[in-house]
Image (cartoon, rainbow, N blue to C red; front, side, top):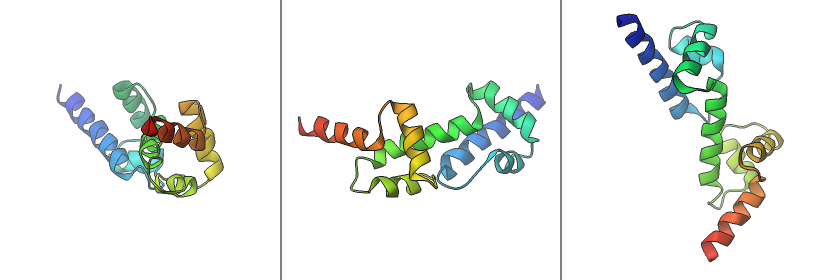
Length: 116
């Protein structure tokens, strides 16, 4: 029983690491190294615990934060960089794939909802 609890704590620590540092350039190797697991073992355990890969979890975290920032005065490029993307194009593509609309359209929807 002890090893499972110990591994669960490592996976929990990895999720906390992602939650705190989502805007930084982190990848599977970095996270696995920080929680003292091989990347393949870590990947398997993370998927088992959270139902998704660490990369998908990180991307969803960034998109969730971007949604909040799109309600501010920041430009789309600023939002992109604020949440950890290097390319506005890749940010826009992932945002649209995740939400069904571009960041600009999402912002317009927010504005129209708030003015009603």
